[in-house]
Amino acid sequence: MPLILFGGLIFGFGLGFSGMARPEVVLDFLQFEDFGLLFVMFGAAAVSGIAFAVMPRVRDSAPLTGDAYGRRLKSFDRNVLIGGAIFGVGWGLSGICPGAAYASLGIGNVTILWAIGGMFLGAYLQGWWRSRAANDAPEATSAD
Image (cartoon, rainbow, N blue to C red; front, side, top):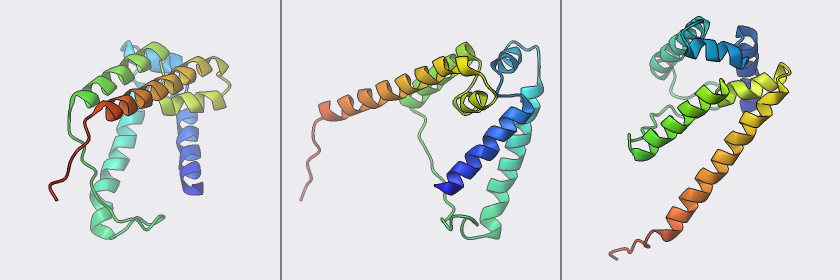
């Protein structure tokens, strides 16, 4: 847990330092008026890409946690498409993604609490919907 907190603090500091925790910067990017976010995303993608390509060849396990490296593959299905669309609409309406929304609180943007409240409501509704769907699904029987 402390490792996750530390990583989140570094991420939030980076977002605040780069200006990406300000919704108006993100909205300017989405309206093709400011491309600073593109450089921030490219830098993050380059560092992540190098780390994902090199580290499994250099080490058998993650240096801080000791967990084995592995790929988590998720199929591209209806839920991924709908979730991505909802995420994109929320990002466009609020001008900020979830990680940057928390960092935005750190720079004094209190009105972002509306967007964070919407994220929590959306997460709750998604959990409710999935649990309802799981309860409605017929029970699987084994062939023992």
